[in-house]
Image (tube, rainbow, N blue to C red; front, side, top):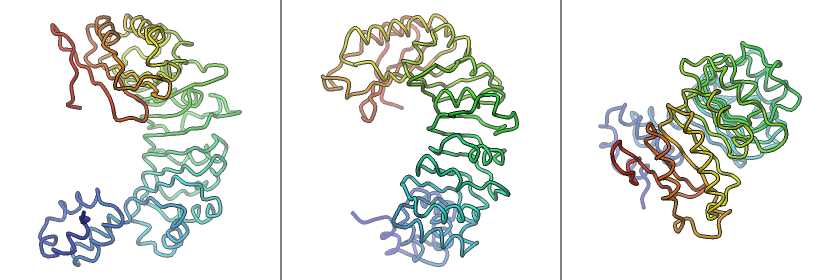
Length: 350
């Protein structure tokens, strides 16, 4: 199949006649390879394609050094970058990445999945950019905290590491004051959520002393936390009533059924019992999402029958409109909808 870039290069007049805003939308969905081809179509198309080529950078271990050197040498290119996403270990190039980050004044999204102990590459003083989204796996250490102090406009934070020696008292109120969503271990959420307008939380706790879920009640968002995902083992430790008190206006709950064998009737029944009890407290919940792990099942996912569970869950709440069954790592899903006065049914319109 011929790429879009090649098609445009073969029809330069047609590409040049498209409105610039239409070209911009098209180029946002092209690969860097196609964008590079489009840069050679015509002068008009080059302007838009070149902007898109450097807007969203996704380097890898093979080209990261060359890219960082280019960004350091050409400020005009560096000023075009809005997102920088790196998901490979590149230890020998960390210094170059650190230098390049200092040249990106319009950066808004930064994803660095490059190891646990590399937070030192983040700008510590006079940071040139103000992020909206940060996704990293660094230890929650002094360097990361120092960087976060400069990010007054940060809206979305993803962190995969626990805070270690830090405690909630370690996090000053002025840190990330505009935070809306956080995806992190519950121990990090416990530190960050209070005093900030957080309304979307994706958290988990796997071992050790469970962090208090009451920290979610301290969000300054108008309606508190509205969307929440937690793993089932942590929810069992917290209890239904505590969860309902922490997030009284929750509308979307996703449960990561990380220990439930989806083909084990008793385990699925116990999960359903827990959901029924929680729904007796949750008066605003309209969406419930349950994620199972296929590797825990002997039976193939497509042969599993969850109809009894879904029926019981809908029967336990008059406000619930959707129950979604997902399988981690698989495309298979069941989206179940209930309309008042009717039986629930499976829909495919989402």
